[in-house]
Length: 204
Image (tube, rainbow, N blue to C red):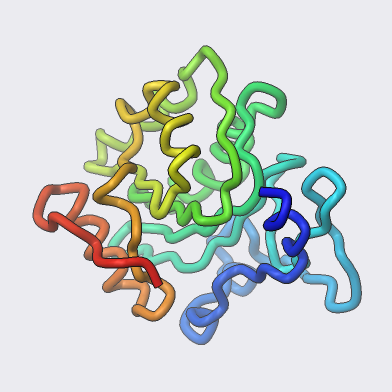
């Protein structure tokens, strides 16, 4: 973890889909109109700088990037980086209020979060935000999937019993997604959620 933090300013959000989607130019995106600093660092995780292309949504430790949205198929692909901390920062409230809720208002009901760069998860005792979120999504046949979580993060999620609300774990890890087209990535993950696909392949 210390090593990863030390090089965080070099970790860019996935950029190979920018030819087909950019959240800052999407008028329906919560990040529409965002401008990025090309000459310095705007965001920090504790004492470590983050690459300026990451988006903040209110948390001081968790950042993201809306990589792709398909309003017809009703899904969003989102990459996360940092520490997911519901205890100190109520990150789930901030993620919902500033990211998922605006997208749900636009009809998005299926959320995929790529979590390779999520370093830790700290759960609050109350899971109301997760329960309410999933109940709202289920009314529209929606769901939430966490992809490629680190082993200790998966254990932290399981200890908090979030497997009652979120799809994650062995079958959702080791997905080779960066070299694939976004629609194919979504279809593979949806197949796992619905039980039509058993495995996701090996890590890149």
